[in-house]
Image (tube, helix red, strand yellow):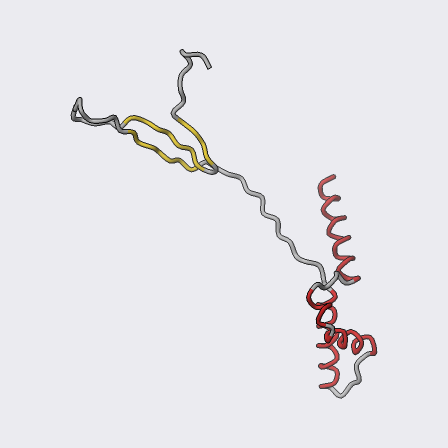
Length: 122
């Protein structure tokens, strides 16, 4: 930077711009120190918001099977074998802590990815 280059009194930080300027005073006092005013201006920002819905997990599937089994019993209907098996899996607490994505959830992910990339190409 050359000695004759002007020094900028503006700077930006995050979403604000600041300008430092001397305070304008009507009284003149030789002993007072110079004061400055800092003006803060909000900068326009563009944000992208992504709405994400998680895919169906195995735990969601097991809970739905349990609900279906109980509702069927309430109507005096025996539940399907696969609903009973999935309901029994709810007792496996370790599986509930870190549940995988169900086959239906995997299909939801594939459809979402396909839709996302198809939309970008058009």
